[in-house]
Length: 114
Length: 109
Image 1 (cartoon, rainbow over the protein chains, first blue to last red):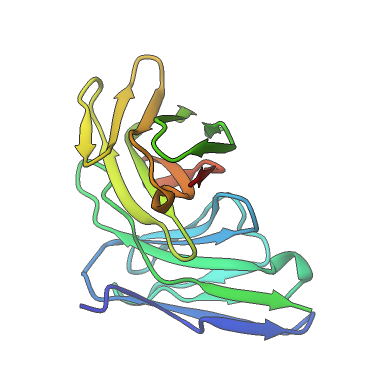
Image 2 (cartoon, chains in turn yellow, red):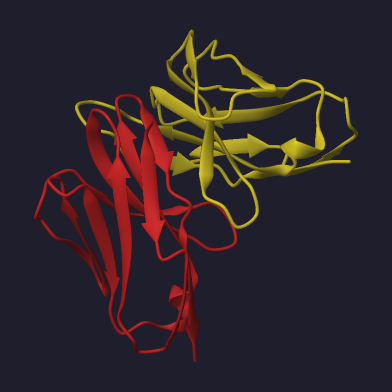
């Protein structure tokens, strides 16, 4: 079982460049999330999706975009990268019914913007 | 505004000590509270709590939720150096899961 797969694991960007972080899950989870984690801090929610075709903003959405065309994939797009976006990014998924299910995390993507 | 507040933010104890980590929250439409352990990489799941007063246990770790007072505690007994990590509390509300800043626990041998 692959679980949640994120790529790339590491990336260095120059200011103003764009890139997409890929996230795929094979557990048929309906909910998917993108978090960022700055050094010494907890996880902040960027965007989330409750199913294919539905996305919504989290706590820190500025500078990012997402799409969810399939249940499996939830890419995160960074437009015009800025040094403030230097962080570790985690994709996660869960299955919801009447309660919030356990989050399954990808291994993380470390992004540096210079 | 939704809040998840963990305390203390940092804790250093000696091996064999017992520690209690705290998590208080203010969220609308609370669904569940989750605890995670994070070492070098992605967080790993410890517990999910949905009902008040029911203790969850796994080895030396245990946790309980108080939905009236809006907090949870995570206890670790007979700590070991391998317990050194950041412990994250998260609260599920509606369709979001929001994290606190974490408690960084360091166990001295």
